[in-house]
Amino acid sequence: MPPAANRPRPIAIELNAVLVALIDEEPQVLTLEEGALLPSGPFEGDHPTLQTGLRAWVERHTHHPLGYVEQLYTFADRSRAAATSGRRIVSISYLGLTRELTREGAGGREPGWQSWYRYFPWEDWRGGTPASLARQVMPRLRRWIDAATNPAVRRSRRQRVEINFAEASWNEDLVLQRYELLYEAGLVPEAGGRRPVADPLAPAVIGAPMHYDHRRILATGIARLRAKIKYRPVVFELMPPDFTLGQLQLAVEALAGRPLHKQNFRRLIDQQGLVEETGAVSAETGGRPAKLYRFRREILLERAVAGTKLPLSRTS
Image (cartoon, rainbow, N blue to C red; front, side, top):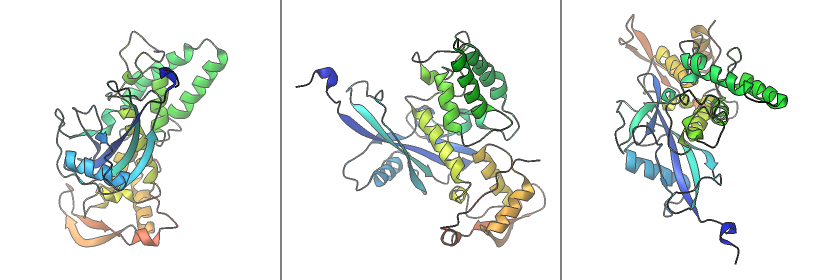
């Protein structure tokens, strides 16, 4: 019989949900424990598939039906073990989209919505360079670079920071890579004492922490959705049945975290044939009434092979 240290630990399968809605023109994620946890729970063997298990668990515990769902990633690092049983935890995470009409605050174990920019404030460029990036993230990353005594390590750190955080070439899809770099630098509370801390006198950076590795899972979901809206019209899963083009642009900007060129956006929407007029108008825009549109669901069949692109060019 192998020594206890070499015996394989029993494995428990857990399901996690990054459940996203657009509320008050903000990308919101459903959380538990006052925003510290994503919805998660054990996989129950009586479900025929993992996805049906996830749907049943989320809908039973959060009372929010899921629309679009896709599997994100399986997190199975050796360090993921339950504190009480010692079992190795394998988390299978999913991205789910839903429509939510009212905003509820999180309280205790009750589910509640939180802006995902609460956890990643450096990812929101809609109003220009995020204050947290200039004032908190970059100064600490520079100190982390300078702390390397080996020239090759210092050069590698500088290159990675430039690739992930350079303002001139900001890539909104690199959400996970940026978070993992901050983790490696010891600049997020989740890093704990396992990583070198770049500035031990300053409070840990930046954005609200989450329990376990749930902020990493959330970063994975945001990155997947940001990439997805460029080639599939999943944004419409988050929109009301009828909407203005202005509302649609604000939705895409909220998800991407940066402003879009209005004329380019509307031109490409028109070229792609994604929407059609309803014949009604909205008087809620604050100015002249705006035409209401709806998503053309038949476009999913028409573009199944060619794909559908949304414009994410910067404003001029």
